[in-house]
Length: 121
Image (cartoon, rainbow, N blue to C red; front, side, top):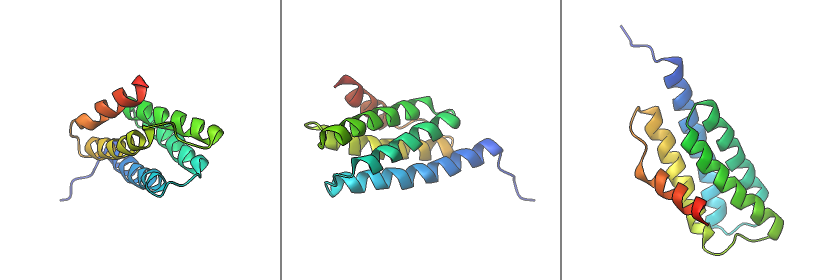
């Protein structure tokens, strides 16, 4: 007899997959030094909303901070000094946090570190 997964577990697993895809887009854009900040901003915006829907408030906050930085970059044409690595680290932490939530594990420490880094500047 197979064990059924709960709707919440399915939702978290779906969010983890979405988070990985969207974070990969952001990370790839940063790695290639694209100036398509709007695409990356839209990915962060979608992550913020999806994390909020599944009740992962800290991940939603992290995505919101990423979105804010990318929105500023869209307006100015550049990511302000030193933030590229922090946003890339935040994307990685967010994807890892979503994966941990889907497995019922504790939030990885990198989520808190990234929140602190992006919030402080």
